[in-house]
Image 1 (cartoon, rainbow, N blue to C red):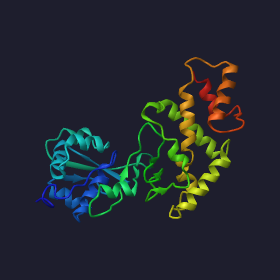
Image 2: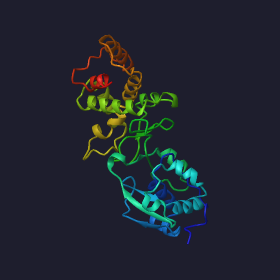
Image 3: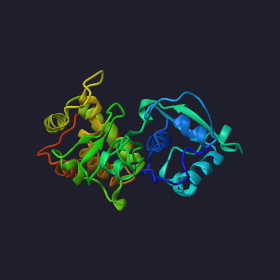
Image 4: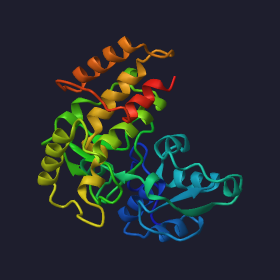
Length: 289
């Protein structure tokens, strides 16, 4: 039995939304639980359900076809919008309509989506959505239009970033995104700087205070905002450093070239002087040729 006539209400997935999040919003629109929705679509689910972002759900091809028919959204569009949808091989080749709940580790859990963008895609009922960050950017989600951002799945709602306009000014265009390797190095380096109060501590401390003042709802424990907001706090400098690392030549740098690189990086980071210690991770990157 269908929960309601197919397509009676259009619920569009957000880009990179987790499948569990989308099914939760879809079910809530019809005043159903996710289990009731799947049962109505004759999709057999296994595993233990937990609300997003703690779990995601994998659908077999037949289950995806039934979801597509009900929502009137082509399967190709669902596959593009729901990046975690491809199922494991055990159900991926099944001809039956199967679904499997899968717990997610905190490091790969989706983040809270912009509430304004979610409401636009959820008619009649605003339900929180959870989306995966872009793989070629720091682990954060920033909505430049509505000035909201997320950086940790422990935040139940996105954060207001109006007091931090630098977070939206530094978003790269498609042509200028850093390579995966440079972004990984940059994220590791800025995380070390942040944790050890190096180089940009005063700037980041001010940024953290502004963010927490604008968002009194940030959970205070067990992890403090200093930890859960770290990716947002360091976001502009991480992108700046990644872009600089991408311009390094494939051969080892001479001492003069190293000095020139640090001088250039200081200007990009808006620092009057930049002299990392010998044990700084940045030196490891400069010598990892």
